[in-house]
Image 1 (cartoon, rainbow, N blue to C red):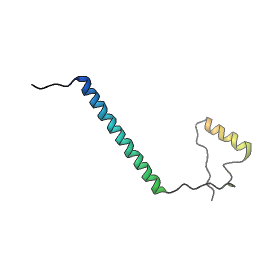
Image 2: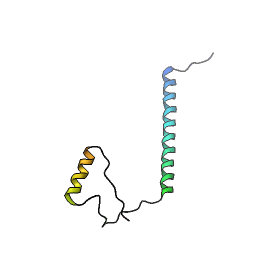
Image 3: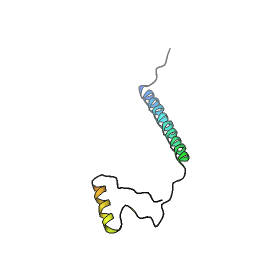
Image 4: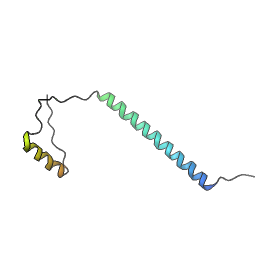
Length: 79
């Protein structure tokens, strides 16, 4: 005589399997991100005396307007 499992038990087992798969996928993604960051190398620090996209209050106002409009603020590298 074969014993059928409770439908609730089957549902719980399926949910547990899905959760394990999600966790494994997250661990793989995290590992891939760490590998990519290690390949890129350490972040460069900005110089303290480096001027930003502008200076003073005008730059703050322009930056606020860009953010309010959903634009990405301009970036100028210091070398």
